Length: 222
Length: 60
Image (cartoon, rainbow over all chains, first blue to last red; front, top):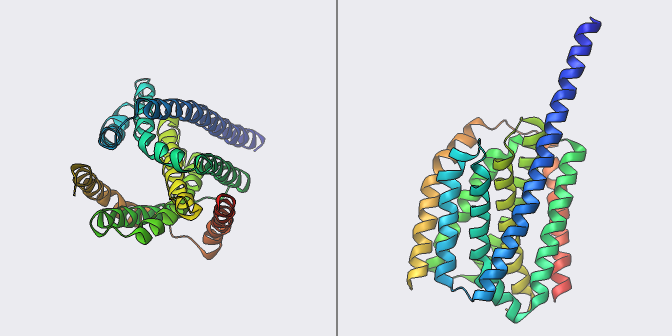
C-alpha cells in the first residue's frame, strides 16, 4: 500500500515537474518570439513598409502557422518556423503601428502595456486557481468563426461600429484563449511548448491589435 | 475596392473554410461546463472589461 502511495505520489510529482517544464519553456520561447516580433515590427516601421506588403507578410505567416508548424512542431525544426511566423506577423504590424504612432504614440504604449498586464493577470489566474477551462473549446472556436465572418462582412459593409464591436469581442475571446491554453498545459498534458507558444503569441497579437483599435477610436485622435 | 481588400476578403474566406471542421469538432468534443465553470470565466473577463475601460479613460 505504502509502495502504491509512493508510486502515485512520484507519478503526480513527475507530472507536476513536466507541467512546470512545459510552462517554463513556453514562457521562455514566448518572450523571445515577442522580442523578435517587436524588432521586426520596428524594422517594418523604419522601412516604411506598405499596407500591401504587410498583408502579404501576414498571409504568409498564417500559411506557415497552418501548414508548416504542425508538421515541424515536434522537432527542432519547429523553432526556426515559430520565429519565422512571429517575425512575419511583426512585419505585418508595421503600417498599423506607424498609423497610431503618427496620431498619438500613447495609444501604442498603452495598448502594449495593457496587453501585457491582461496576459500576466489571466495567466496568474489560471495558474493559481488551477481551474480547468477545457469546456470553453467549442465556445471559443464558434466565437472566432463569428468574428472572422463579421470581419469578412465588414470589408464590404465598411461599418466602424461593427469593427469596434469585433475588437471588443476579440479581446474577450483572446482572454478566453489565454485561460484555455494555460489550463491545457496544466490539465490536458499539452507537452508541445512550440504549439503552446504559437497559441499564446496569436492571442497576444490579436488582443494588442484589438486594443489598439479600441483605444484609437476612443482617444478622439482616430 | 482595392486589391488589398480583395486579398483580405479571400484570406478571411479561406480562414472560415479552414476553421469550420475544427470548430465542429471542438463543439462536439468539448466537455459541457457547469454554472460554476462559467463563473470561473466570467469573473476574470469582467476584470478585463473593467481594465480596458480604465485604459480608454487613460488615453482620452
